[in-house]
Image 1 (cartoon, rainbow, N blue to C red):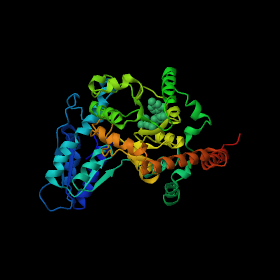
Image 2 (image 1 turned 45 degrees about the vertical axis):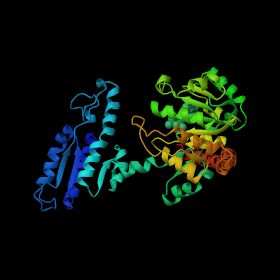
Image 3 (image 1 turned 30 degrees about the vertical axis):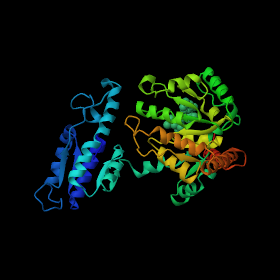
Image 4 (image 1 turned 180 degrees about the horizontal axis):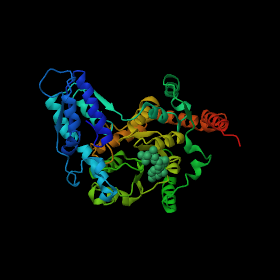
Length: 422
Ligand code: UDP
């Protein structure tokens, strides 16, 4: 399953030729225009008498599926045909088409039951799809090991005490160079009091903090999913129901552009609940996140597990309800819930980009997770205590003599030593 760009199609066809030379039968699943592009190379692979099978049928086959109809001009099936002149929405439509290929891929898998799948890393859904069919999936990454090594030597926004076993594994077992210099959100000592200088509108900050000032310590849940995550109207409806059912007070950030038209998603009675003013505070657009996380009234953070948000919560000692969506968020959830034990999972299972749909999680489940985190049970007590302990460690890591302070010093020393004289 090669991605639709020459630099991805070409090596996959060559690889199929090598598989076939070793006696394996290969099928390349692609769309009509891309099939035309690769057909000469496939024919050559089949002509050569070294493909290793005695069967008269070709060792490398092309299985053509229609390019999904997403409103792109006919024939626009390969990235090389896309130019800025086609408009900004074309790349998005292209990504949408890439997602829609899962359905014909599933049908192919069910009908043909291959022994293994080689799929491009851009088809992220193919990992789940292959697993569902019980077939091993190899990801094809079209880059050099050198480039990979370069991208794995870094400065990382983390600190030693947060994930010591993994730091050890990264540095010793994998032998990577890394400097752990975080949490960088604690760069300024009074960040917790003054917040991050950003573009939050002053009246939003004042309104929100004044609203939180009236609430008892640890009673409010902050609900925010970073800057790219979007929710369908059905998901927003269940989230609103869940917040209502939880009985907890909440600050909810609804990113601008999402759910502007409340009539699309507001469950019955929610507008009235908000009008009362005491249960919830909704922020549309940018929220003063670090100030909210460090407010004494805050008791929990419902997050998509973006690493910045997670680390800001760790720094503030706030436990999390984790609701990952895509990218590294599912890994971060595992770290937060299973390794660090400073969070409770909402139980999201489907990895899907902002352009794909997600399974709708019911309001009862959402309310239940908030209750587990913020209620008076043993689980909530343990998670809250761990979160507080970790925040003390985060702060000490950044202070003089702390691990991140030390790593930063070593990084600076090394850079200074490499300065060219004069
Ligand atoms: N952020 C904020 N206010 C908002 C939304 C986000 O200050 O209303 C900040 C948040 O504190 C974090 C960053 O934006 O520092 C989001 O990064 P993260 O890695 O959590 O998520 P992403 O947006 O990259 O998915």
